[in-house]
Image (cartoon, rainbow, N blue to C red):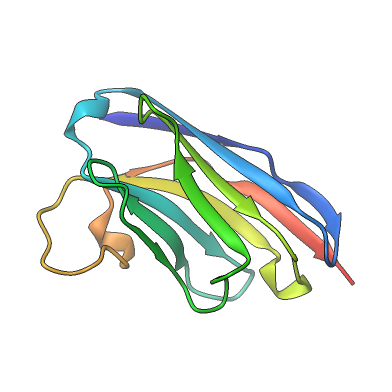
Length: 126
């Protein structure tokens, strides 16, 4: 099992920037991909961005494309989400997640992931 711990959330004004960090520990070698989800009150958890660990191939939801950047460090145990031009609709709890399924599609569903962090809150005020 992989343990994931997020950090970096907080409150920011619209137009601002913030970087989220996710640290992985434990059995990290079995992951194929990891990424970020977010969940706003009353809404379903949605995929924000993900990255294949071996290749570095990335995915972004349309709502964040061009504003958010997902990256991982060289040892592939730290995941980042750089968030620029933040908008009030980005307000949500952000979760780091990792998965090890062999998929023939991008891992966009909650069920594609078997390890989750506890979440970090982002609040963007207008």
